[in-house]
Length: 225
Length: 225
DNA sequence: TCGTCATTTCGTCTCGCAACGAAGCATCGG
DNA sequence: CCGATGCTTCGTTGCGAGACGAAATGACGA
Image (cartoon, rainbow over all chains, first blue to last red; front, side, top):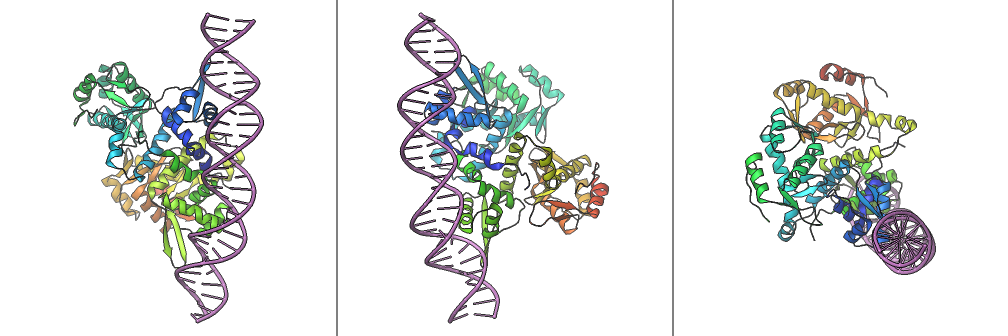
């Protein structure tokens, strides 16, 4: 009858646990091969290939061949935002034991969400930048002010508009979009944060702590390793 | 290993077509019986009952017994927002034929999204209220200004903060939350809009058109009924 | 040109789960 | 108190889809 959007077929892509694991793995924004993603999801290569095909058909991921490898990555930032929003919604529904909380501490603290910084640090950054008057939030956008543009330029960050992305662990928005990607790029190349290998978790270097505190004015800051 | 939120189990609730149909049906914010929802999803009563049980267990809906009837409704506005956001994401991924667009015209134009007004009219309302300085948007919130409070009061609408809810058909936010519910309540009781029976679609009355144009200042307005 | 390696395709198996009808429970109306 | 109605539970059936291994494909390196 009416063409209400087809919730079911999109949800089906996320429902399958192996695919969900792959998508979660891809949320670090990097490209991975079918073999690697299969290992991450605990399935064989052929099974992984079948799943990846469905995800490509569903436009959630795209593939870039490179020699005899084929690298799979999320289709775009919209997909990452959708997944994070979905995670945001599904999180509070499970009671959380203290042990669980500790177990994923590093991820909750600071992680890469596709191409930008999320977690406690990501949200603190967004709040500090708003407090400093560097950006203003206008519904789904974060717009850079003139003052913000020069302050960010001094840190090697190009001014660009950002998008608000709901953080599932903090339940407040952090900065995604072009500005989010710029910040993450600068943070990685300037060695403010380093990525844990094979994880989305980020570790804040001493230099990074300094930048956060002095340049951004992020307070309440103890590195919880 | 880490306790990334469990995307799969939440998605599984939406994946099943019968459940998706029921959820879409419940998006009108009303309570429905198992029999009615089963009919809406084209399944038998016992099958519907099993599905509804899973949705209740998953906290997406809740049930209020009343005599020998049991009324199912969405658990809260958060669920409605999540579903609409999900629909928002899934919509543009299918090419749309002209026939389809016409078919769901009424729904795209004006509909009830849980407890507030969505669609073309819903988005136009939000934009007009921002333009009038009645509300300001502050990330996930729409906050009522003093000027807005008195203007709304004159229309019989109590001032309350609203939430931004992404509209799947218009791809822009409309007003949800307490303010959205207040507006919808006033619109229905003042007979600015009337609900089509057994549908989420709303039909704007001539009086409603007048209010939209004069009081809210919504322009570009032709009723495509 | 040939082996190797990453990936996909194919065929088969199995299991989860949705669907139904019948039966059991509760509630309302007379 | 009895029949009718709405809903749920139970047992059975059948289909869809995921998992795997084996074989085919394509690309690199020697």
